[in-house]
Image (cartoon, rainbow, N blue to C red; front, side, top):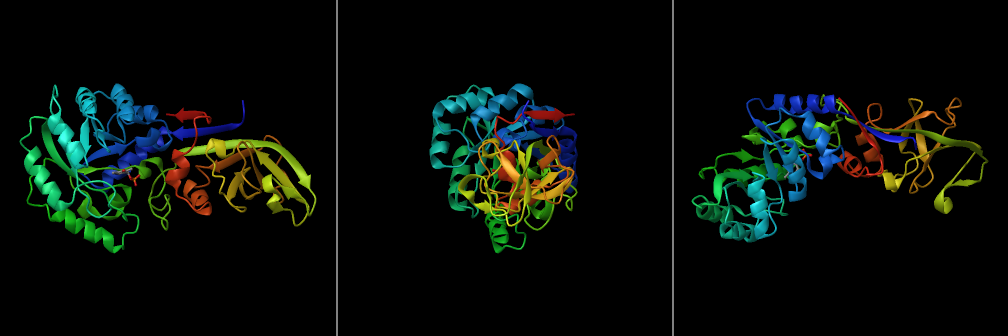
Length: 357
Ligand SMILES: *Cc1c(COP(=O)(O)O)cnc(C)c1O
């Protein structure tokens, strides 16, 4: 087998879930498992969290999979339903549905449902992607609170800058949220991972941790280790070739990297078709034999190359960690100009996942 595998430590997910709960005792928690549990395997992650109060998915396809594994937990559909018929599926799956637009609200009122749905009205408190203004939400609250299609009426909003705790938009969004304090809702939910970790006033009834469950940091300037989180995914492989490249020769496509001195180059069976970003610049850290070496040359579809000059003992078969337990995914992401979320959720289906219990 090609030496590349994503090992997923499910006990670390359980640990991180417990840490999220400990940040906000007495609150209920939706474990966010959208996007195949940020690339970790929704099936295994959901099965590893039987104690979760609920789960969050982005779309109906994801909801079907999770409901099959967990018959009872509350299961929140973040983007809501896109056609009238989808409300019937949502009712059959006993989902909690977000209603984020007038079109969705009208379709809900037109649906004939076997059982009423728990509805989460989405407030656009300042992110301006989805949701109702405070005034619109007030009007929809009045129309939906007596609707036969609605069981619980709940309130949800989302922070744009929770990862920047000092950003003024956080307070502005909270103020918009508070302007609805007089409306009765069964439950309220605001906090993603960053707000769970820094903003107790936003904890409310239901937490929505995503990235922290997967052992990565939502903050650019605070590591997952500092936050007490355990790494979950380790993407590991091995050197599949080693060669000496003379000074002046280049490595990889476009000859973009040129050896300034004779250089020992190691080749690793991981590329952008596995989810390793092609944009990774020379110098991005890779762990070989437990030591950091710099990526050199362009990342190609199936392979990438590193400079082994500081590691004379490295040879074909030597172990490689692209990110994980010893090399934080956030550090690799920062070197590539992105965030851990993107690296984790983009690990492709070609990479076998090995789940550890
Ligand atoms: C993805 C998502 C979350 C989880 O965010 P993290 O930063 O990963 O904790 C919470 N709420 C909504 C609406 C989301 O889309």
